[in-house]
Length: 142
Image 1 (cartoon, rainbow, N blue to C red):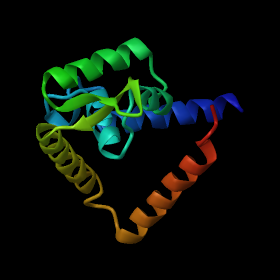
Image 2: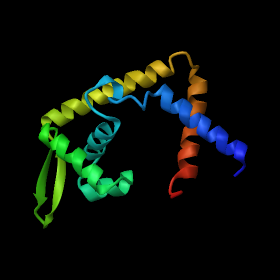
Image 3: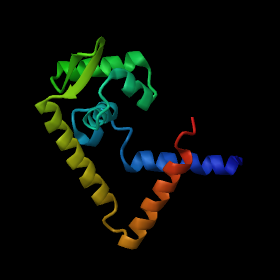
Image 4: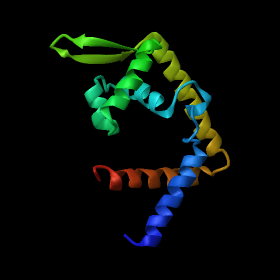
């Protein structure tokens, strides 16, 4: 890859990070970090063990374990032994966890709507198509 292309990708990454305020300590002006928010989202989507989260997020086991413990202490998730394999803990959102995720999702929807408020519908489709193409090209590019 050419140096200029690398620079342009990195420049876009910095832009996108700033636009979505991803470097803020708390995600979307909530009490949660972006990782805590993501973990709540993934558990809700059916990722229900720590090992599944590790595979998906590609993060350090100790880090994910600490975040899960924090979410459990805040009564946002539960960890229950899997009846088929007692060594495995199944993760689930509590009612409080669902409420927190609903708030995060609402804020995320508002953020994206606001971001695109002055963009024409045809341009939005073009941008989304470009995003999908990026995902397709870079998926499984470990």
